[in-house]
Structures are given as structure tokens and as C-alpha cells.
Amino acid sequence: MNALTLYEINSLVRQTLELTLDAEYWVQAEIAELRVNRHCYMELVQKDARGNGIVAKARAQVWAQVWAFIKPMFEETTGQVLSAGMQVLVKVQVTFHELYGYSLNVTDIDPTYTLGDIAKRRQEILQQLRDEGIDTMNKELPLPRLLQRVAVISSASAAGYGDFCNQLNNNQLGLAFKTELFQAMMQGNEVEKSVIQALNRIANRLDEWDVVVIIRGGGATSDLQGFDSLLLAENVAQFPLPIITGIGHERDDTVIDMIAHTRVKTPTAAAEFLIHHQEEELDMLEDLSARLTAQINLLLQNETNRLKLLASKIPVLFSTVKAREEMRLHRLSAAMANSSIQNLEQAKGKVVLLEKQMGLYASQRLQNEGRRIELLESKLEGASPQRILRLGFSITRVGGKAVKDVNEVKEGEEIETTLASGTLRSIVKS
Image 1 (cartoon, helix red, strand yellow):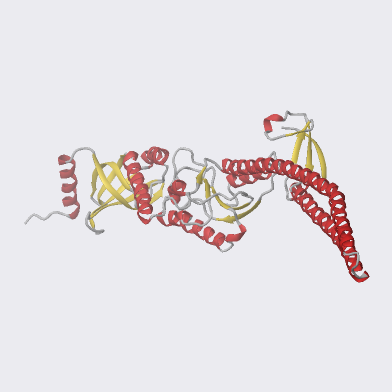
Image 2 (cartoon, rainbow, N blue to C red; image 1 turned 180 degrees about the vertical axis):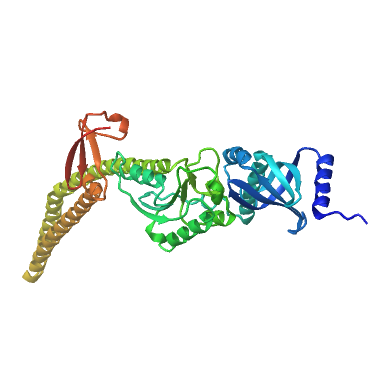
């Protein structure tokens, strides 16, 4: 009997495969495991379409020279890092080694296949949110009139967070904002858990905030996958405060961008959104203050004129009543010439009483009108520009004219800023 060694039989298998198989094949599979050590090593699997059981498995490797091309190309196209759990379409060479056995050499990858799978998963998440009836809940929340108290979710070391704070705190109008950072991981596998924990910390102090801003800024687009999460999307959609996202990725929207109240491109744009909202409210407040002042002045003038008119009528009214009573007394005296002196004294007493009553009536009417004037003056004082300045606002002027647009000011011009406690004069540098 002629026996073959293990090496010989494995060599026959290798030779048979090399002779019978084509050079390369496109293969659909899921990455079960992936590790990189100069070369990239994967375990590819296929799962049962009706369950989650694995029906096929193979080792695969991407040699360093090919990996140096595939990795950046895949990430630039998909915005994702190749990782376990992804569906991929790879071009492979079937290999068999006498010592290491069967494996696949990956020579190329089609990122559009994975991109379609990513988009499909995003749509599945959005559809589930729609099925739950929560996909527009955060968008439907009204923005508060004042957006001064801002809870920020970001990494403390993120450049975008610094840009946001600088833009917000150095705005041209001198608007005051209160911000607090609720730190979270903004890339990697911890994004979902970390951002949800930050939202929970904000929810515990809900009355302290007007709005939540989630900002990231910079970094690779491949780090965005943590924001395509059903659990995170459910938390954002149902959060009781409006959420603004400025994740800093201009090409694609993440799932939380799509369900947040407002999506802007960058952290700086998020700050500009808040500043513009406050600027509109300040303009409205100034307009209402001017209209209220004019209306109160008009009412005050009308009431003053009315009071003067009433006061001018009091002597005439008093004189008329007195004359009528004297005439009546005269008639009574003539008609009752034979009446007792006591009846005559009673009639005189009635005239004296009427004189006192008219005096009290005139005095009470003057007091009431005086109080009304004081009330109108108090309302006018409440709407005064000085009180508005004490609320934390300021007015910047050039040449005595209030500045509402930064383009109205030129470099080198002197500006005057009015605060509640005084006036500053500055030279515009930029």
C-alpha cells in the first residue's frame, strides 16, 4: 500500500485548487473579527438568513502593501473604519498552504457595498423611530425666547469646543451666555454610552438649562459611526429640551443630526445660531420698549389733560349746586315764613353738609387720578432702557447710532458701549 504524507496530501489539495479555481472572486461576507499588525487579519462569516447561525467561515488576510491602499480608500468613501460587524464585498484569491491551510487573500474591496449597508441601517433606525412615533418629537419643541443657559456635550480637549466657547463669549453685541460642559467621548465605541450619560446628567438639572448643544468638530469622518445608534437616537428624540447638533461633518448627516431640533455644520455655526437668536430677541425687545414708552407717554398725557378738565369743572359744579340749594332754601323760607326757627336751621345745616360732601368728593377724585398717574409712571420706568441694561444687555454705538450689524463698524473706529453701570469707549481692531 502506497501511503501519502500529510504534506503530500496537502500539496495535492493546493495544486488542485490552483488548477481548478479562477484567479480572483468577489465575495460577500460579514467581518466577524479584525486585527491589524502591519498586515490586516480577518475572519469572514456568512450567517443564516433565517436566523443568526453561521453557515460558512474563512480566514482572510490583507497584506500590508494592499492594506495601505484599501484602508484610506474605504474610510474616505464610507466615512467608517473597517470593523467587526460590517458587511463587505471583497475581491479574494483562494489560497491553500500545506502548514496553515485554507484562507483568502483580499486584493480589493468595494466600499459602495458597505456604504449601501450603512445607509440601509440608518434608514432602518429612522423607520423604527417613525414607527415609535418619536422621530419629530425634539424638532417640535419650541425654542425658548431666551437661549442664555446652554448645556454643552463635548470632549473638553476637542478643538471644536474651544471654537464654540470663543465664538459665543466674544460676540460683537456683548450678549451674555451661561455655559457648562458635560463631558463625553465623541469618537470610538463609547460614544453611545457616554453621550447618553451626559444627557442624563443634564436631565437631572433640567430647570437650569434652555437648550442642549452636542458638538464635536474636526477629526476623521470615520469616527461618526457612534452617532448612528438607535438607543442614542431614541434619547435625543425624546429629550425634553431642544438639542442642537454641530458635529462638524459637512458631507453626511448622522442619525442624531436627522432627529435633533436643529442641525448646523460646525461648533462655530452652533454658537452663531445662538447669538443670532438672541440678537433677534434683543431687537424685538428694543422695538417693544420704544412702542411701550410712546404709548405710556400718550396715555399719561391724555390722563393729565382729562384730570385738568375735571379739576376745572369742580368749581363750576360746586357753584351750581350751591346756587340751587340757596334758591331752594329761599323758596322754603318764603313758603314757610310761619315755620319754626328750628326748621330754618335744619335747612341751613343741609347746605353746610352739602358743601362738605362736595369738598370730599373733589379731594377723593384728585387722589384717585394722582394714583393713576403714579401707576403709569411706574410702568414707564419698568420699560426704561436703563432697566434693560441692568438685565445684562449692552448697547454699542458709533457716532451716537446704535450698532446692530458688525459690518456697520470699520477697523480703527471708536465705539461706545453703554452698560448698566457706565460707558466704555473702545477702538475696533478687527
